[in-house]
Amino acid sequence: MAPAPLVGEHVGHVGPHPSFIEIAKPYIFEQRVQECLTVIGMTEAKEDAVRLSGVAWIDNVRKSMQLPVRTFNTAVVYYHKFRLLHADSEYSYIDAAAAALFTACKIEDTLKKSREILCASWNLKLAPAEHLSSDDPLFEAHSKSIIGLERLMLEGASFDFRNRHPQRLVIKLVKGCGLPKDTVGRTAYSMSLDLYRTFAPLKQTTSTMAIACVELAARLHGVDLSRVIGERGIRYKKWMTSRAEVMETLLDLLDLYTHHRPSTTIGNQNPLETFIGMRIKLNQEATAGNLPRYTEWSNAPRTSPINTNGFKVRNGIAPTSPVTPITPGITSPGQGPASAIGIRGQNGTVRFMLDAARARAEKKTVDAYYTVEEEEYETEVEVTDRRRA
Image (cartoon, rainbow, N blue to C red):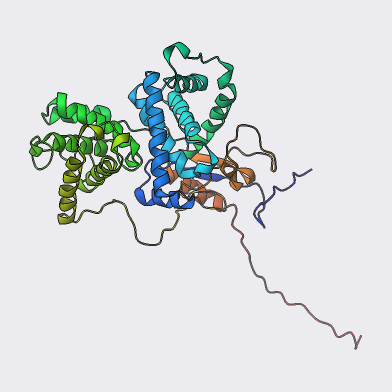
């Protein structure tokens, strides 16, 4: 007996569903970030508050658990990508931050249980004598919800485990430029952590982020900028970046230090006028060099590239994220917010790919089997007169 068709299946579709393909996006530029925030209805003020609160929570907990910086970097990137897919009404920022840190611990091989993460967060608010153990029943229900959000974190990143860590390159550039490590080096390293409170890690390469942190630290301490900028400075071609990309990252950092100083490490250590003065100089340089505020910005109407074998195109990031196909009308526990269950996950398999060229080639091959071909034939039929017969 043939299986019954799924609810909402494409009309006229014959045979098994060809499946949907989700292509990983290692970089998400500012224009796409703004589009995602508009779709989920996130205002600028609220977005800043949720972003900074979540990153601060991750930073405090990872310091309490003595986790390495690479785990912090990965957790924050997953947190940012998750928020671009889900409206803030669907989750608590603490739950999202805990799930991001829990996922990052697995990816970076610094394994921690969800109960241990929640326990560390809880103990931050208590005196040492009142600290609880991770086995306390208080964390039982909450830990299950964190495990349920883990899958949404992975799907939000399209199961792309390629992560960028600029801190090591920051140290290398400080040494290569001959800058004092006790002043410029320490400041640049702290700036590389503050940078993760912005969307720059989603937009820029490792080298771009490291160069921007070193340059801003050099400007802050008033050292000779010819070691960093110019012919004797850092060669952008060697690091596969450009002045426009570095400028965008510098201005992102200065926006953070100008508007959200209390939420940063370096912002509280310097007066506001210092950052405003540097921002004015960089704006003048950008204007003189005709550098855009945001790179990779297109004013033309956007069209989504084909990245699916199914009937609905999705450009890597969308306001909902599909989960594993389920029986229509049934929601299993731990699947997360309702909007995370997309129609694609119910009507076909969702697969994740890293290679866009392979996805296009597969779609071209599959389309050949779903193309409807029609042929027209003309035949002559002899008509007899029945009245004569």
